[in-house]
Length: 179
Ligand SMILES: CC(C)(COP(=O)(O)OP(=O)(O)OC[C@H]1O[C@@H](n2cnc3c(N)ncnc32)[C@H](O)[C@@H]1OP(=O)(O)O)[C@@H](O)C(=O)NCCC(=O)NCCS
Image (cartoon, rainbow, N blue to C red):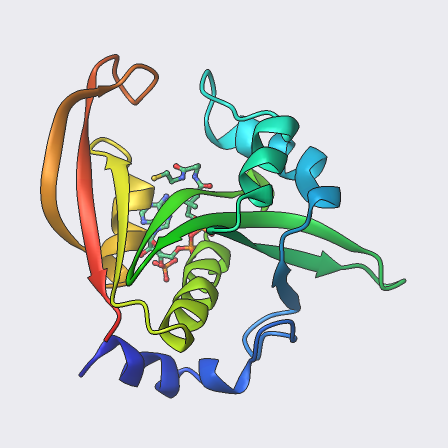
């Protein structure tokens, strides 16, 4: 069974871009420059010692080749606050996850997976064939998430991370086939 069969099975195709997810009370929207302060806070909690500032994130979102998906949770009054995000850069028929982070209070609820699935849906629509990422070989949570989404290891970079799980940690390069 392909990744796309899986997405169909869980009803993801019925949850279009900018709509309420069928699986949770979360909405997935494109990231805008107004989001960057909150996204920087989430990023800092996820990447201690290697945080990207709000202006770093804003600069990335201004790039034409970069898009972001934000997961927001609405409160009883309808106010939405971001609980996670993913940034993706596209080059021709390939794309790369630049970063992904979910607020600690919202982890293990399927937010990270849903963010990547939303990004994949958009890439598939745009006929992008492959999605790459780099992950610290010691980041068990991220590795489990990516393997679940059928990313496969295609390379590694030893001593790549200055601020990884251990100084000089190895980066794994992973790829998902979107066709
Ligand atoms: C990695 C991260 C984005 C995962 O987000 P999340 O919303 O908690 O992930 P999900 O709930 O969607 O998890 C999906 C699957 O990934 C795996 N997974 C996620 N976190 C895990 C953990 N801590 N331990 C083991 N497996 C985990 C599980 O298979 C999980 O499915 P399950 O809950 O049904 O078992 C989040 O832990 C995070 O923000 N970490 C800090 C930043 C970071 O490391 N980013 C990745 C850099 S490459």
